Amino acid sequence: MIGLFSGAYSKLILAGIVLAAIIGYGEWRGHTRYNQAVALWSAKYNQRENDLIRASMAEADRQRKANEAAKALEAERIAQLEADNEKLSQLIKELSDEADKDPAADSIVLSPSARLRINKVR
Image (cartoon, rainbow, N blue to C red; front, side):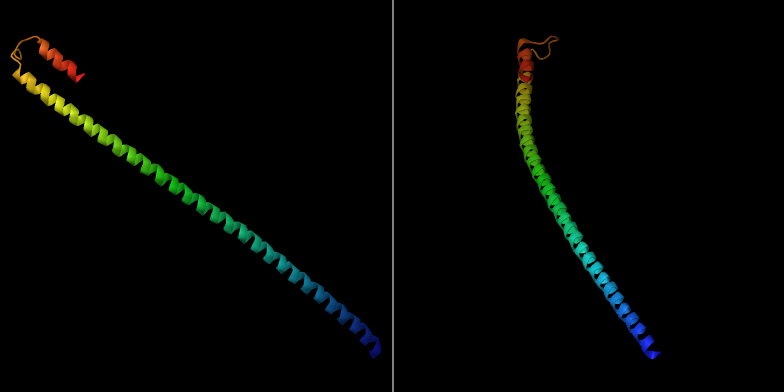
């Protein structure tokens, strides 16, 4: 009777070992595929992050250059306005000095020289 059980038990043990091996291989294969998927998605994620950083840096550089160009244009325009303002101030001073010397300054109507001074400002 021991021989009967020993053959059945040995087949059962062998079947258990084969089943454990199959399960172990399946687990190992599952972990391998999982690790491969993690590596693939990590690489894609890192690439996307790097692309976003590069795009962000490029946009910041573009904005910096645009701001520098706008500031240069602004400085040029301010300098032109200051020069125009200085010319206008000089013209007003000259015309004011002429008006102070005009003998017809006290009259009710505009003198011909006053009209000429007004027309110079236009």
